[in-house]
Length: 490
Image (tube, rainbow, N blue to C red; front, side):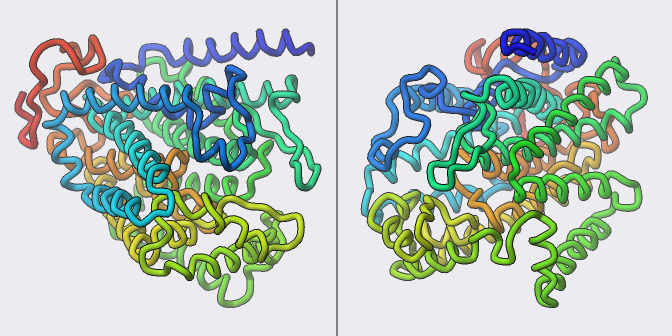
């Protein structure tokens, strides 16, 4: 097949997926395009790289300075997102009240810019990081959370996953790169790195699988047969991209999340106690395997060496350098900006260069110290508690949240995913915010179908009018904002 024909067939296939899934936008506003574009940008190449005006592999100096075009894109999306949230402030308040660990963590990150050796760069990155939170809050304040999540995963997954396969197979100059250090070829798809390709496929795979399970359960859903075809194909593309990425961590996290999602979707695990027991069993199994020395067999089965393909050497080097600032860290997103990078490299084997810890918890410790690590632990605990409560409130919608939190927590054992503009970090924030959104809406159809009968069900704001001003625009114009509160009054 020629590349031109592959491009044409890919475009037809993507259009076909959207056609099969048509009519699934009830309770979704146009504002959802903002997190869609944000996640598409994060989960692929920067706009400057797509347009050929920015380097695919920037130098440290270029990373510090940033690209003006990318900064303008992020700035425009952030400004539009904040405008939407201002109009939805009555819905945002109860969500943030329930998700206060997020605000606490972001506040500490902002404080840490004051003792960063690169205060200006750190502060700019901190401001940009609020875009991640703004986008997930838009999804959590949609008139129908379930519909918003479905549209988000469809819009991003139906495009990025088939496009990645096409680029890898038929446009190798765009979909593959050679590692400058090892000389080995890596599949990157729409991204610039195999690990980024892996993590966006992991996030999309879990969201798509959640949607597919909901369709299997709801036998009365409108257009169920054609939607099953579309979402089954999407799952196939997600698995394909995960395999092509050769990112063992993403594959393992996606598998764990899918198994958890499948199990807690069964009636036997609908009770919170059963959910806690299942998660605890998974954690104990992992800990027992480690303490009994079985981690070597597990890592070999995952395709890694006994030292997790050099991860343990990297962890030791980063921990040694980070020990200079053990309590408060180097400052938000500052550890890898200066001489620390070269000090870490000096402790690594010859020819090994890294710009992250390959462990989310160690990365947070290096950037934000023990205080930041404690706040991440608090955030994870808060996310899981809210996710479990949301699952008890609305099992059909809430099943995704605990599976996502656990999968992201495991992912960060061998990858640094607690970082701004990272799909795993956004997925964690999205799960926390949507769980809080479910809990902030008392009038729910507890066993609502995946399609959502309307604004009053399936995680929707009670009393919301889906055909109002927010539906016609970005939720910014159209007169006074709708006054939604915990009582569901408009």
